[in-house]
Image: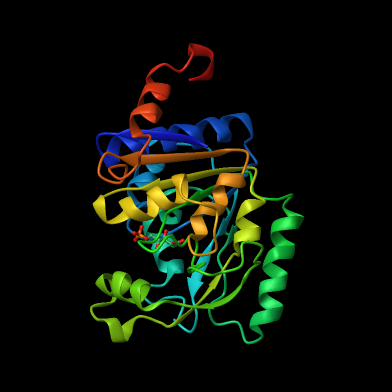
Length: 255
Ligand code: F6R
């Protein structure tokens, strides 16, 4: 795991954007796994300004609310359209977002996994993290081997996401999410986290034991993870000094 701590979300985001840009220039037909929420908004803004070639890129979003119409302003379909897809030239057939209104959910989830495999897997997965340590919507106690499926949101996540819906009662209770096993198959992962509200979840994910109680801790077993944090999100890391020093002293060839 590489832990990069920057003073602000903007600076941490720029590093993540550069990693993605480098991947797209090395592999123009890369497959990206994408997340939504407050955290990656800056990242998508940054990618849009970079003027990258998206013509061969394929994307798979990690999750979507179940039962919310695709064109609802808070659906992840709408989020992705507004924050990224309407600003770049990516063929519509290359974009995949879970269908929160699938009639046969189990079948849909199997098909989504098949589509990821048919695209030869995800080259780089972008992740945020919930205040309770979820990645995607794999809430605490999700199996670390889980695959794409329907999940019930915890009260904490409903409370956290009520800010997007006006009130808690408007937040859907169910979501379709890639599983932790699905996420772990991505060849590279970038997790972004900003703000003091994420500091406990970040500390458990990076320095705690690997446990279903802290879904993001599964990432400790992934061979290629970069975690981009601002100072506030890093504030509960015991080894923060070491991570900063390591990044400052990176050999030039590794930068
Ligand atoms: C959303 C997703 C979630 C969010 C997490 C943090 O696609 O995968 O895991 O990344 O809930 O959300 P924000 O960024 O709004 O704090």
